[in-house]
Amino acid sequence: MNKKEFLSRIYITLIGWSNYLKVRKFPRFFLHNRASKIILLLLFGSIFFNQIYTRSQFFMPKEYKLVKKIFNTISLNNNLGERPVSIIIRAGEDMHYLMKDVGICKEKQNYCGYFVNLDPFKKFRGFRSRDVNYAIRQSYLHGHANASASPTGTIVINRATFKVLEGMETFLAAAVAHEMFHVMQFAPFEASLKTLKVSKEYPKKTDEEIDEIFLNEDQMLEAEADLGATLMLFYADYPKETFVEAMEYFHKQAGIIHTKGQSKRHPDYITRINLIKAFINDKSFFKEELMNASAPLRWEYNRRGNWLKFYPSQIQK
Ligand SMILES: [Zn+2]
Image (cartoon, rainbow, N blue to C red; front, side, top):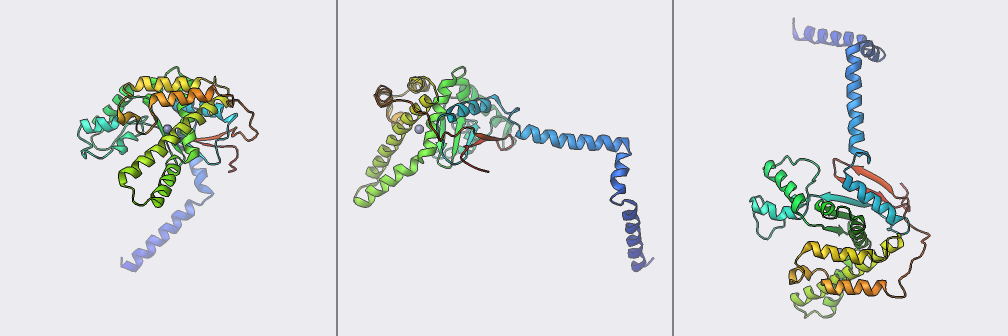
């Protein structure tokens, strides 16, 4: 058989097959075959279940369910802005030290952000996964309660927070409200802008002096977030002492609070508590019913990406 004959035979064979498997015949062939039916059922069933499992808020970890419940309560009488906010529960800051212990993070100055931000709900499968997975467990068992916010509209919470604050939902609400306030105030930008203005006005200031100004401005924003969160909780019908009690507890669980390193980024403990107490005892501390509250929040969850996200009711999608 020469090349031409060979090719034409293949062509004819293909036409023959395509005639046999006509679009109409193809599903009929499958649906009349019992084994095929089962395979199809299993295939579509597993795709369907995978989608449900990945996105369903019914199956999400209990930690995310609790954060969702708190935000729903807060949104009933608070305006949470006009952009979506993502909540991420992460392995936590202890991972930084643990990864140094096992020699995975080697650079002395480098913060091991990659490991701190790992998803604690699924097994790590990368480099030295046994050590990393063990560290994720330790970070949960020995870690402290802590959360932080980014002006990108993201709130991250160490998973250990939920263990340390077990049974203390109102304290978790306090942490969440403080971070939510940071998201709305674009925290570092405002402090940095004021510092920039000073540095332009007084160009002879040294870098140390500029750093000090930024730190003071940053501390002002921290104090503002404390008071903002105190009011946010009160507006949502939490008792007015909730935030100050939570703050006392956070410092107690942190342990050491007197060193400069501890008090640098935030006002020191005594200043913080005094400011909040003065605020809630002031005559101007009262509750209002808001007309533009963010409830009902619209929620989305993604297990693979490990995030939970809400859209305030002001956002149309
Ligand atoms: Zn803060």
